[in-house]
Image 1 (cartoon, one colour):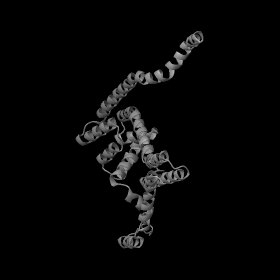
Image 2 (tube, helix red, strand yellow):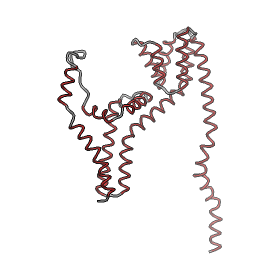
Image 3 (cartoon, helix red, strand yellow):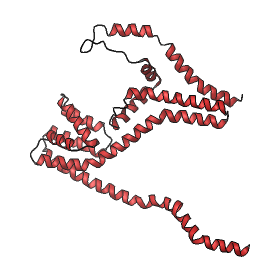
Image 4 (spheres, one colour):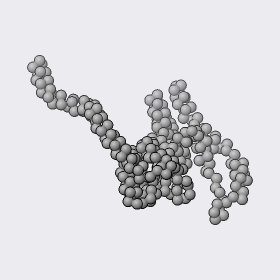
Length: 292
């Protein structure tokens, strides 16, 4: 076998062997004994004992860097924390997908050993490992864009409700109940945090941290300062709603100015060649016939 083949086998077998070794050498009896001693006398409601996390989750967390896990948690927060994909399931799925990619690459290499298969196997394993990250990151970007689009209309609803005599939290509940988008969900979650006893300022700061939209962060800072210094909330909402409408118009104008540049490349690559063929094709055929 060639050195490249041995290198590919080493790169494929080593992660599998490490996973098997880490799972086999885990001192389960000692871990169970320590867990039993630590949780002795502590039970959940109803008398059920506290369960320890699965061994696969512990192994996956051990293989995932702490900073990387925090980044995944941040992306999940921006994506709205989908119920079907919690952080525990994501941490488990990433190494398993990479392992599946390595096994598929090994099978392809066994059938047709070559350098291209090695490169394809490495690319496939890397792609499957980072595929959940790409999906979550893309979902988070789309969700933040949805929040940015909904913010001006939501601020107008809050302003109308407050000027009609409703309190700010009641206006938030009304805007969140009438809306069905991402911003409405964030407002309802903020109200739930306040209802369970969380201070208003912390609940508003948590709302700003769960989003990357700068207009929403500015709105939260204005509301916190108004609540802290006793400024009329209607005046703050009127100013924020006006600024949000102006920024929305500016973003629309910016996109309109970028449109000719974005259309230029499809025009050059797709429309002009066909147009040249239609216009110059008959002349080229006649020239060829004349000289032939």
